[in-house]
Image (cartoon, rainbow, N blue to C red; front, side):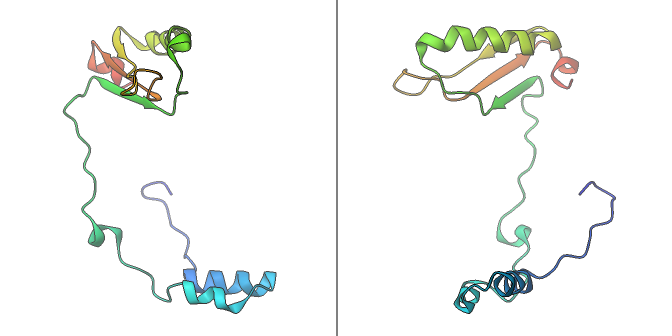
Length: 118
């Protein structure tokens, strides 16, 4: 839901699960595992994560394939083509502790803040 937009009224989880159990003719014992309350607010369980602006020129890209040394250069070439069009940067693609494969991420530090924000 976008900030400022109207949020639809949510159905209580217990009621939602109960209706699903009735629709699909599932065992009523499944309701034993569902809380009847609305639960605690997430902020009361743990403090919200604050944005760390210590490295404003740095962009971390995650979800990349984890590749061995034999495919490192090929993946880096693809990343160079994708990232370099936004501006001059230095890239670091960390390897696992054994040095056998990448960690599945790249850290790009741009020379200009405006390039990192693009």
